[in-house]
Length: 266
Image (cartoon, rainbow, N blue to C red; front, top):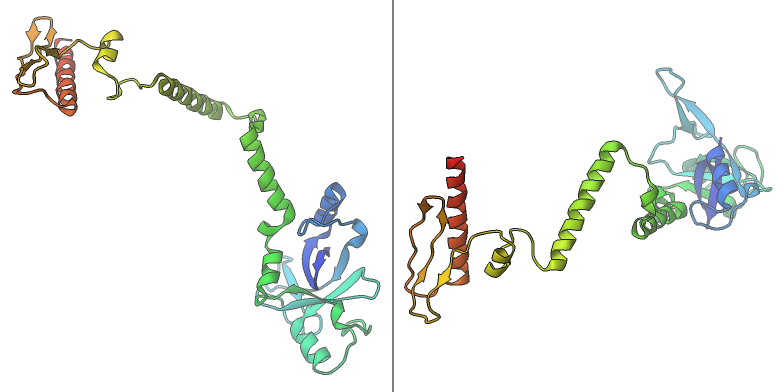
């Protein structure tokens, strides 16, 4: 059974009766606008079913006057009864041709007199405002749900969520990696980072000293030697003080060759 749960300025939204009743009993609010709503405010819709071909119990809805099936492009209205507890659904085409143009303001289904203020629009593809009203993403309870979820994520309430074993392992690895990264940033360096100074590397025992400066004079020669067991690399002579980038290139080239020699002897 279908009902009107939200009527605003002669625009209405259709709901399944039992789904809407559950929402209203829990929140006491209109799911579309967020306004106060009671079960007694729900309006029952009288609609004509149209059996679809092919069997299988499939059906749709149609205008009870013109017997035309409603589609996504149909203009559909409902005429409220005087007690405002029931509304009869028909096509706008029938209302326009047989009521407005014929100057006949009687309900085509019940014969009850009505006025234009008793007409509620249910569907009109040309009315952007009504289309937005019927869009579930614009419903008040959906917007509040998104806000609450965002608040839980930022406040850390999602810690109570139970994950599978695989998901837990992945989350733990991510957390561990994040903690290591934060610790390295607090220390000002990262392992293997090119931002570490030569003194940092030597103090941590990460490598042998490969630079020995003979003189601070710009014309002095810089000799670089690295020893490993019986293998000694040839010295590199530069005509002037190398730049920081050149030092790094020499350092990485020496380390690469050392690593290759270790693998060869191993």
